[in-house]
Image 1 (tube, rainbow, N blue to C red):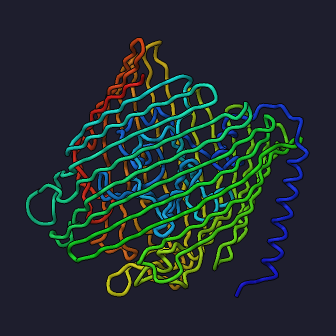
Image 2 (image 1 turned 30 degrees about the horizontal axis):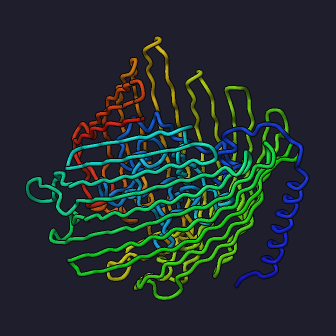
Image 3 (image 1 turned 45 degrees about the vertical axis):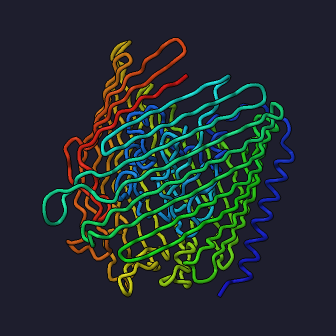
Length: 631
């Protein structure tokens, strides 16, 4: 039963904090200090107070991985685990014991997670479309709201260059892969515009080893997709601008049978998506401003299967609106705002309620308590139809030991309400599911070893009550269930370094290593103590590179320890450890009005046979050639 007096007290408290911070904003009229660039950028991604925990994957690091999908960017440049049916097929993310429904992906600040399915398919996100890819390796419900338990990925476009510029990217690769992307940007006077077109297709018929018999080509695995992305910005004056963005995409993917299923089965997935954003930005002083934004997500997913005969339609409609102010008063920096989200899944597969509405008030305040010590507090209260979310908070403390060393600690509370499919999907929806409630503690250390070398280590521990996990149920159908308590702990290490050998030569390395356990502790769970499904205990992604003048050679390795596809951990559901080696060579060419980059990649050079999801073989050795023109 809901504790109504507690709800009223908490509501009054949040409103008072919000009004108090708004009053502080009204008093801020005279500050002229320049806001750090990272802080301004972070404000655009709803994380003004947590800017120190955002890791931006630089263009240079991204250039050393194939120009395919967001999944490639993440698995080679982050601590995150990618789960995939294969190249160009369904791919999702997992991190720190959290599954794909517990992480969030944003474009232009708009949440892209399907409100019914709760996840995002990375295979509908070609990496070439995005100018900026950033990762938040922590739970951030106080900043981003419902669902951000296990971290978030933030996608944005590159700033427009003055004048007129254009790009052309062309890629070909193994198994009939072909990709073309064209981009035109105009930035003149008050107007700026960027338009991108992308088309991609692949036969995807790589050879795999079935359980019995000789190796054979993967059947029914081809795909094709098209994208149009448009950004328009109008500068009303030097302090005010209006920005509009639209992203249209469609993708058709044939899904091959699993290696342990009926070889005659044929499945197809069709995704038609549209995402739009309209925002008004106003800067009052160098330290204060406001944002008003509206966003809309329209997603239609069609699934068909021949054996057995199944037709499924999963639509999604999300309206998103946010208004916030940020500013400063004396030594305090703050942000206050409100947010409304209306999500629905008006498809035939949901038995009843197919609408979720979220309204939130949030506030954030940070202060430099001393010359070396900074403290930041974020609060957020959401109201959701049918649920009573807790007060979410994030408390970050940083101590700058020196110019080279920074220690930090963070405590946060995060939450997630069940998705529409988990609640109402016929015939296994569970309307009695409880929302997830997560408490996360982190401590870390960052240091700069050389001018172009930085490293860090993070230790984390979390406890999630009512963890929602899909498990096999009656009749072999998987259904969402609450696991009473899940514990997770681990460590993450990163190191980026480059050594200048001469004016023309340099050598560098990028290392991402993580180790972590995530398991149920409830006495009523027969699988308590077992590592959660599709969660490796150890994972690493490393790159070595050597640069000479305009040439660069890189060698990459990726490792993931064993995983299990079922909570019971039988030998038949074990996925063995994976160790992959890949390499690439690229060169920059500069002409009078043209810059060109040519690339050649060889993936899985050891021809390892492996799976990221049970029954879904991944390709052996394969190659990719790419040419990029910048006008």
